[in-house]
Image (cartoon, rainbow, N blue to C red; front, top):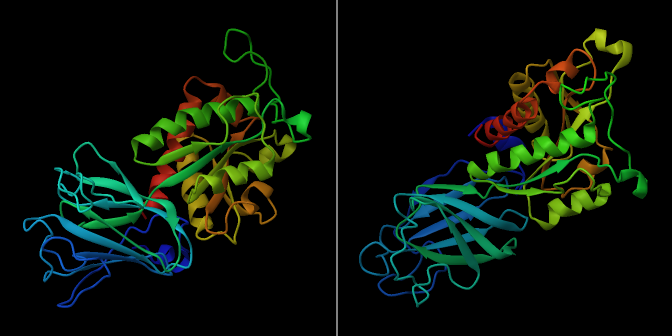
Amino acid sequence: MHRSFTRNLKIFCLLASGFIFHSNSWAIGPCPAVGYATSCSALITINPNGSLKVQIDPSVTPYDGSDDTLVGVINHSGATVYGIQLTGSNIFGLDGDGAFGGGNYSGPNTNFIISADGNSGVVNFNAGLADGQFVYFSLEGAPSQVKLAKRITIDPGHGLSCPTIHEKLGAFGDKIYPANNPPAGRLREDYLTVDVAQKLQPLLANDGYAVFLTKNNVNQCLPLIDRAKYANVHRSNMFVAIHFDAPAGITRYLGNHGSEGIYNSTKSDSYNFANFVAQSTSSALGVSNRGTKVDNDLGVLKLTSSRMTSILIEVARLSSPDDDIIHAAGATGKAANGIRNGINQFVNQ
């Protein structure tokens, strides 16, 4: 696991991609006896620094006498956790003999989202697994890899109705484009942020994320506090606000253009997140990379949960030399793919 990720991570800010195996000759968890199993065959512990430890007890017989496994999860993170992602050979290839009767493998407090091949899935904790709580479920075998579930909120900035709620309208570009080059007129941030977000959502969903958009149309405008609440309610562990910078005036000639990642330094590992996304977005779009900037007073980042890794990406400036690049066909798709790649680089660091 990347050292800075381990050092800076606080639980529920992002995926914990590492795992450690230990074998004991004694019972490793408080699973009840089921069938041939006297306790948990596998116990997943969520630690205070965000790492996940997996203990395997080979002395516990599969509860069906063959391969079905009781898996326990104990949360010692200091925060409520809402899901974990497990991987292993056919562990979700459920064949109808779950530990809870009636073919039920997940029990009363969990539910599964299973991949098509049965080798991976997300275990959701229905009401959240609070610090100190334990839950168990059954699978067709022990997991070989454990991560926190990938949940992300994407927030397209601004909106045409923002002035009606005393929020800012998005920025306008300073160049008027002809009618035969869509879109006609000036570039508008309100339209661009929604377009990028709508293209980004299916890309991330295809990568296995649970993706939540604060809005999906250009007219809608949410107060900053509601944008943050939306992410909190949906139990996201990452938050990305999408924006485009207003024209830079004379400072454009001083290199004040391109992509920039803005982060709140109080949110765990947000600098690294902003850095990955800024680098990847600028590369995909073909604009300069202005790097990162800390802003602990930016409302939409400040109001998200303290456990949430939260950033804002300024995709590019609505003035030269960025504006022609943004206006070109396919540009918002390139920006979406760049943000996606930065998110994945951060998660898999």
